[in-house]
Image (cartoon, rainbow over all chains, first blue to last red; front, side, top):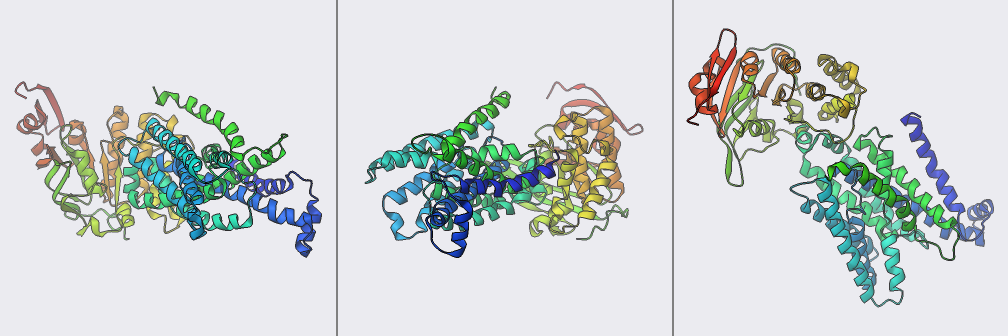
Length: 329
Length: 269
């Protein structure tokens, strides 16, 4: 099939998966009745389930996926490395660490914006640390090694912070922040994340031409009229806003930022700029799909969404490493 | 931006690009010291010198990629630092020594990247005209849908040259475009650069092959240890004394056939 018709399919898949996700849940729901009641405002149980439980959940799945997808595409373009993504580089984990500190030590009561802000700062610091660690030589393995170090450090500190927090559910909470989930969220979470995701995506999309030019390396990009410093300063807060906002409402969901850009690269004809915006619907589809699977798996307790993305993404990451193994030798 | 001088052959007197007392250093080590050089419209200037002489650094400084620590680079009288990044990118095209491509783009996509300096104009017609012209001129039109990584070294360099030509800049700065190429591709590249110079552009090209330099360049700039040793016609630069001093070789130049004969290395060096 031609890339254009595949792109149309991708765009059609978003509303389709969104409806399927709305339809999924522990209790059976008459969608039409619920929708009718919701429109009429009669406040039936069905309407409440739809509007207050399922709608925010599906919206968040789509938004978080889009934000992680575009962040992954931006990082891969910036580092010119198909193995880069927010979770492999430890950006999501650092973001979760800062969110946990704010949330469990009562700082979030000072203002609703402190949680996403802390998550964004955590993500931004991780990007800066990663760029600093790989300043001299930005080869594949230095980036991955830096990412392993940052993510291990951030994960362990998150567990420690939760352990010290006055919280009887620490273990469950660790599980949530490290694997990620969009269950039990409300519309206020959507409004919390959406503005930052919009700003972040705008920042990333504004650097799309630079990412195209960067295909030829930093010096040639500079000769084509791009200031590498200025453009990087757009991309870092862009990634931080997208990842931070996603983590603040869903924990650190892994592998979406890695897989989505990689799968869509042929559709974008390998152009980093086009890949950016394609990764928005692509990421939305990926997390919606994972959320549908999570809700329809048989079992006592619902799995965290990140388990599914990791179960699918882990082998995929190994496959990518395997394909690129000549670079390590 | 005007493109005066692009299509009309102009007299050699017009100075397009000028380096004044240019100096570049890193970590306290001087890479370039007190460089004064002018690039004229319609001229093909060869930049020669042994490895580590500062040729690539000079080209980067002239292109505005490497900032000058002392002195300045003037484009038609205006300092590069006073131009916007877009103005500089439309006026000065730079071809990297070993161009790399990090994603498997097609030939046409790579050449189209040369139109990025014009992205704010959104004039797709003139963009595709320039891309077609560059593809045709370099003879790679039949390859335009091929993936760049599948090409030979010679073809890859032609693609990158086409990208540079698609910028339609008044100045072209090419860093060793002929190294690692077979003789036919070397001649092809040099002739394309010469044609652009004949059309009125100023072209500076770093060369290791002194025969190519003598054959195609009107003037040569001889660099050694970050300093300009001499600048002039091939006959004035490729003298046995200068070649012995800078390169440490015994060689003679025949101005009639524009060829250089390297006899051997000097033991004193």
